[in-house]
Image (tube, rainbow, N blue to C red; front, side, top):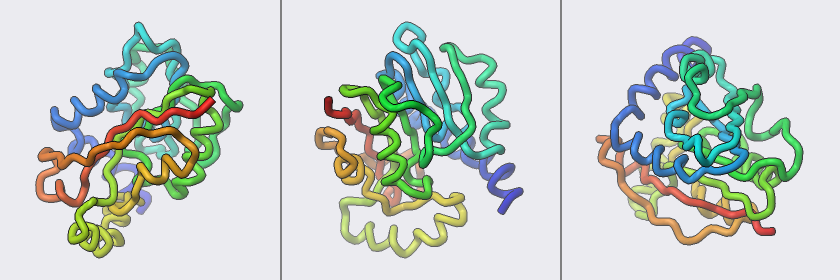
Length: 209
C-alpha cells in the first residue's frame, strides 16, 4: 500500500476532485474562514487558493500523508495567506486549547481513523464561539443506498486509502458538543457513477461559549 497510498492515490484524488463543481464547493466552504484558521487533512492543498487574504490572518495546515505533502509543496509556496504547515494528524493536534477562530475539514472526516477523537480535538483547539466548517460525503438518507454503502465500504476503504462511505458526520459533529443547524444532503453530479453513494453535506458548526 505504500507506493499506492503515497504516490498513486494522491494523483488519482487530485484528478477525481478537480472538477469545477467540486472546486466551487471548496471555494464556498473556505471562503467563510476568518481569523486564525486551521485546516485538517490539507491533502495536496486544493483549497488553498480559495482562502480570503482579507479575512484570514494565518492559516495552519495539518496533513499526515507524505505523498500529499509532496504534491502540496508548490501550492504552499504560492499561498495567498500567511501559512505554516505542521506535521501531525487530527487525532492528536499539537496546539494549545482555544487557539483557533476557524477549523476546516474538506472531504477529511471520511478517512480519519477516529472521527470522535478528531472532533474532540477540533472542539478543544477552537475558541468559544469559533466555527468548524466542513464539506463531507456521508451516510445516505436513503435506506436502499445505505445498504449499498455498507456492502461496498470494505472495498472503498482499500481503494480510497481508509475512506468510508457510511459515516453520519453531521450526527457525530452534534454529538461532539457543537451547535449545528440542519444540513441538507446533496447529490453531486461531478462524482459520476458513484454520486448516489457519496451524498455531500456542508456545514458551519459552532463551539458554544
